[in-house]
Length: 561
Image (cartoon, rainbow, N blue to C red; front, side):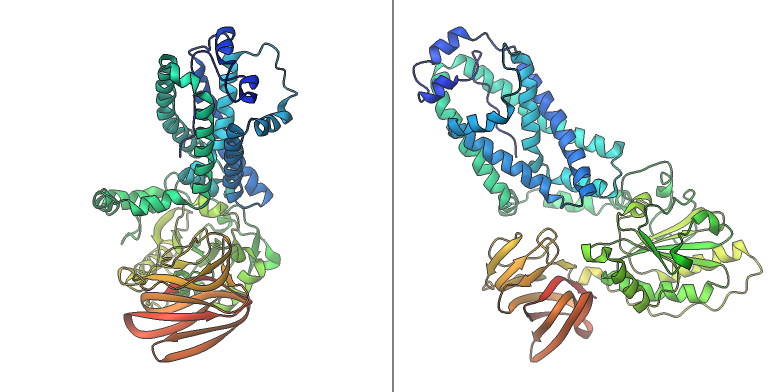
């Protein structure tokens, strides 16, 4: 979405008297008495927009993170300002009300060129809600409190890229306005039209209409995108995240899941940890204190189904090789807000049989320092403190264990290693199963029902036809950014899936009843968020299940195995 910028001729904007009189009678006088606007004004406006957008996006996102406010606040604030400006363009008296807080600013003989830069500053703030991709990236950086040069460059590049076409339209519109007398005579109508457009844009952004239009318009580049996304070069580039620094700059020397040991620099620090579990007195663990030991860092989140299938291998390695010099550290990087609660993580760690130190990386500081992007992720560090192997996601446990044994022998050739562990590998073929399905309004995927899926109280009904690998809702629901819960009576979900196992992440107090074919079962839900198994089959198969959720139960996601 682009801000609406009008440069209404060489003689400037209409006067207050013109607005009060409906735009008639004083235009000619205004045009004769006002000095011409400098030709530099459009460039000043665009410069102000770039500066304002960059500062508001960067520091606004960081401030929201510090205050613990949802990152969506920044977007909503911009949408409100956009709508207010639109109303001001239509209703002059309302515009004067908006101007009143700024009447303390000296108005005598203002410099019209400097006014262009000020206008750009205002437009830049309004433009923030339009920058969805950039806001998503800045949210991650802001949540860690580490907005570095990469993030600044990303924001500035986006702002400049958006400003170039705006400058073109501004210059073109100004030239037309200078040459077309009818344009100047109809400035009042143009202002009203601009106001209507701005209000319509704000409403459209509230209901995510741009995304709906994108889905409705045929994607002529999908084939090319698929080819690019599946290329080996892109996959290698996406293995590690951004925010590179001096500590992690060499991590990309390790490939994902290499069969042999590699060398990719000294292991970055474990930093920004809120709390430690399973250490004496909750004392932190420093990697430097573990020189001479082989270290396995396991990034996980307790409600992540992929992590749950991986953890038995990690706990087995800890038990088998601890006496031989292996030290396992679990880095819990929360995916949901409820996963930031230390008590929830402590209960999960005990339930999973973790006897090794667990670091609560609630601000994703260590996650970012390791340029991680995945749950689970394993980083294998040798006795000298060098990262020698990186594995993202599930699977290849035999390879990881083989490399653990090799590093233990390198550290102590006389080490008496036990036989390899024999934990079953339950990693599914992800190409054949439905992707993890989030139910919160800001992360939801695979929704195929009718109605607007945004935060608040909403009513839904099942569609007549439902696509594969999707879900739909029926009844009255309250949607939040993290979860959904029935409003009043029971609510229903219908899920179409491909999987061997279907689970739901649930919390609260109540029941969940699911029906699949001729089978109906009820689950009692009580307490903090946890993963509950709905059904399991011997092999991956297609199916449909209808889930009835009672009032008092919060549903976060469907996960599949």
